[in-house]
Length: 309
Image (cartoon, rainbow, N blue to C red; front, side, top):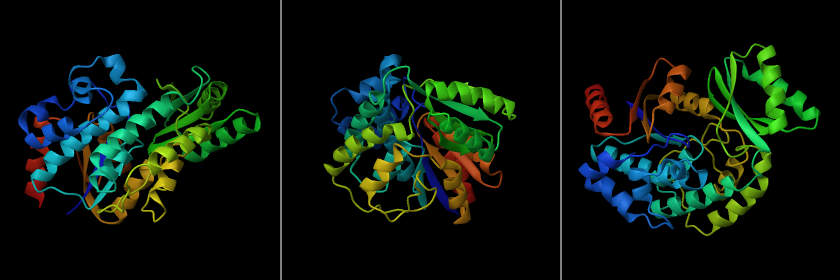
């Protein structure tokens, strides 16, 4: 049995995340207690306030810390991955777990990444929207038409069949919503984000992130990492990959398909929420998929995975 660990992205955060495992496992506690940031990450995760936790500037490092704490507990049961991947922010959790950077460096980088993304674009000028039940080629056609009109519209996330996220200027989101519904989209849902993430509008933020990354000690990962920028393994320099990631499409669907092609039959989502579990189920019904965020979901996953070994 080959296993893929999938690390949660931004949007999954919730007050209280990780608290149960912190209280019950010294390994989880050591991850939280070891993080040195300019705010109390443990207190924010466990107690909130929610508006601060939902702020991009804080959410990313908080989710990463929680995800790595959970992953450390899972590994203590002898359950380890053959491949790792993550959704956007989750890629940093995957890389830290795979030894490409220390947990502390990952937290420091994602804290700064969150700040860069939160402040990258003037409020109200850009946005993102989820497009439901429309083929990617039709969505791309609409993006191309809007780009020709002088507004920026790009595909941000290939989440799963039936859910693709677009990103760009506020005007582009308005134009795209209308055009996509006309082409047959079931719904186009504006997302509550502070800007057009994973678009070329974040090029300057990517350059600033590069400077942050260059200050960290980055290594070759100890495990195969499947990257957002392509949906497969990459040999390029990690700084180049992560600078590109912040301003490029996230090929999550393709990442899952790649891992399945490599023989992965079990996926374990790590971090708050179960968003990625839902995506995987829409990508393939032929694999086992679990989400682990607390004691109950941990125990359920261990029982089934151990039974299938």
